[in-house]
Image 1 (cartoon, rainbow, N blue to C red):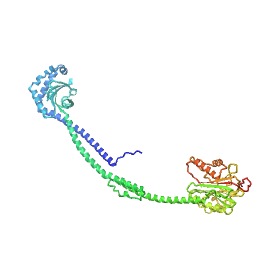
Image 2 (cartoon, rainbow, N blue to C red):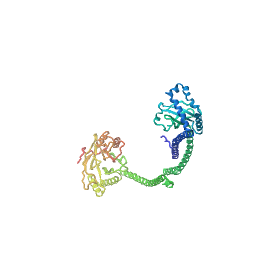
Image 3 (spheres, rainbow, N blue to C red):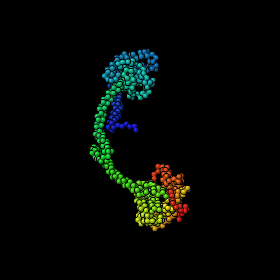
Image 4 (cartoon, rainbow, N blue to C red):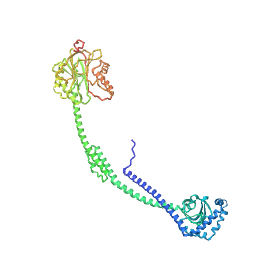
Length: 569
């Protein structure tokens, strides 16, 4: 499995603090830039208007008005000043030379130049607008370089000034190859003559705004960075002391806890030694871990008790299984000295101990008793009831009673003290070895299966009584089976026909007969092998729900051959 990349919580915390601090710093710088640039720009606008206003008050406004009137008259003497200027600029501008040669013009130009040098402006000029032709005329230019000749024409949208004379000059921004971005603003210059629209304007380079903005941003950036560094250090130290260190302590303690329990150690109280600090979440986490530790200690203690109890019960069940198995005949051949017959049986319990049982024993030298039974229920209660039933059956059988009488006595004995209403189905048969005559009785058990020599296995539908332990005082009937040389008798419990697969299908009596008839003349032990294989293939991995018990008797040699017809009363 590919190992997943991981980061410690301390690194994550540091990255988060630094990241957030950088975001705050960038936001502060952007915000500061926007507001500072806006403030500085507005300041320069006020400065521009103040400069032009101061210049206007510092000079004789009437002289400026006179100069503007003269330039306005010369320009308006042409039908289209712009075309004249573009067609023959030298001849056109020569008409304005007389204005530039006057003492008033030169004095105004000198004073405005002095004013410009004392301020941040790059150019101060007097201009006249001709709104109806959307042009402006440079009248007086106080500049260091590229001084405009009086009368130079430039484009200007003057429609907004028609019928609105005296309004403030609307500032605008232009770009100069020498000074970069320039902001132009101005004030009205009043004239005594109607129809003269003159303004005193000044240009201030906005490059100074950018320089001052950069300098301010650098300064504020350095200060902000220092503040962010201090904040980061403080936040990291606080986070480390209040959260990271307690979490590391909890992690180390958790490792100690798992190591101690992993080595099967005794209960621990390591989480009680943790100091959670003052952070409420750390306190809640620590208290939860302490509660968990206490619950696990209690669980481990209970688990140890349960494990010991389970081990004790398992030992007792193994002992009970061994006792039950040893109570049943389990050594084969069972009677190696007897050549007249061969008998074989087995029990496969669904749990450690079962409620089925079989038995066979010699009553005397000429009589063999055979018993197979199925107790209601499973497990230990059924096993105890089975042992009692087995003892009762054998005791009454050894008294020389007939099968029906044996069942009657067993039934009455059980009914006398049966508070849990348990019962047992029993089939019993007593074989006279010398003749093959077999007397049988059935207390609610499965039908026996018989094969006559040279024939097939067939079901014997014998008379049934009720199961022992259900109703006291019941009577049962005997019936006879004549067994001759080569005959085989097969009895079983319901665990065989009721064996179930995953599809809830039953193995069934018909399938049992078919398996037996595959090798009808086989030895009894081989018949059990065939039955076992067939049942295993049928149920596959389905769980076993009931005990499975079988008993088979095969007649080898009967000294006296009686009547071959089986009689069932």
